[in-house]
Length: 425
Image 1: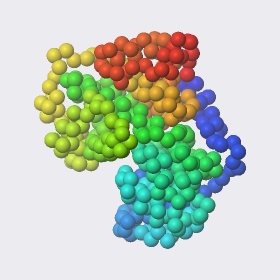
Image 2: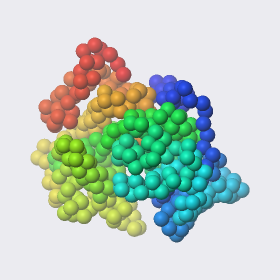
Image 3: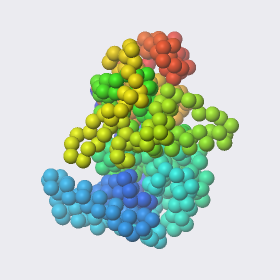
Image 4: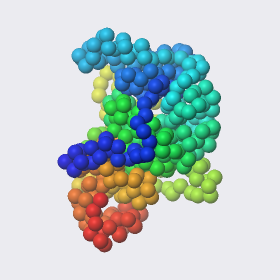
């Protein structure tokens, strides 16, 4: 923890991943496309940091709803003494909530935060780029769609970048900056400086499907679904997630993310790969996702219920029918085995992302895992967990898990090479 939170966090905040050949930049006027869950949060943290923001939506009514959510956040801040009413008014005065894209004129940074649909993102990109500052930067807040693909709809792909926030934006500290194939150094520096300005932690990664954080986070939820499919008790799975050091169990967190969204992303990935002549391998989580979304219509909290029930006046509880659809195994796993699988699968996928040059530094990998999706802080991050476990011991245990539970646990080539040389991350 000392190594990660002192040395590596300082390394990131001092600009280790920022291009050295670009002078300091600042955002004069920010445009945010979309006022929903992510859009209003991005608007709030930016205005809080003194930036003038234009927040747009498809209708004035929707834009006002987003502004109302910001007012609620500020009301709570005043109520609890975190700010004054006078300062709250100053923050609100920096925000223009509108359905008129003409207000985006002179914006030198625009962040698109609309629905995860490639065509819709392409439409708003084309609209906004015609109006914004011709030398400005355009960013997408997508959590899964490759940036280089989205940049094809841009008239300035060298000025196009990913700036991936996490929900809730005003509480989550990490921001993942994603470089596209044509993204230039000036654009990376602009995004990096903006993230520091709004008092967030920037990590810089290369473009890939799911980037770094979404890609590795999905292994945590998928492993939880695999454990369920094997007949392990849902409550034991949730308990294992928390005992592993994760803030929320895998079933609870996937209810928050929404199974419907998970299914849409997976299906879109299948289509994209098919167009490239590739195939998305089936994983043990797939039958669970299919049953819950296609047969049971249990999509998650926002849709009334998923793995949990959400009574209006009471605490959530696990859906009683889960064990009907996923019958208990005769010999369920013990907690230690489940915890090990949960930690190992995330660390292994991180090594793959590092091997593929998606995440390019150990500091970004460790800090990104803790502040991005809540990997056990006590472990110091995914790669620090491997160091602590012991490279050779980790590689050996990965092989044992692969034989027992499937090839997803196979040690990557990088891990094998490092183990043979007794190296560390």
